[in-house]
Length: 142
Image (cartoon, rainbow, N blue to C red; front, side, top):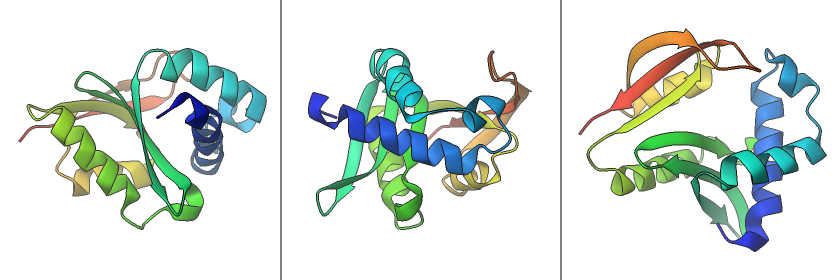
């Protein structure tokens, strides 16, 4: 991701989150402005961010912190076209010894995606505040 991509990626995250997280109060009240600030200060500031695009449009992004897959989002208008799989394959090349991640237990689409790609649920718990929602930790090992 380049600095010029940051706003587009943050807004992609906003659209994806609004579509996926109707069960999280913070996402129900999220605004594009808050998403831009949160993305810059909490995601881009602490992770390596990679994008995938089609026809000069950013269609998805991956945020990694060493072997931890912090975020993987595909714009709702571009889902189920292989962009998420391409990002996940890039994550595997960056961390060939294995990857760890968390997702919400209620996020059936994400759980099915990761399980389809060989990730195994290793622990169930609760995400940190402010979400404090049931989550699941996944690991992928080659």
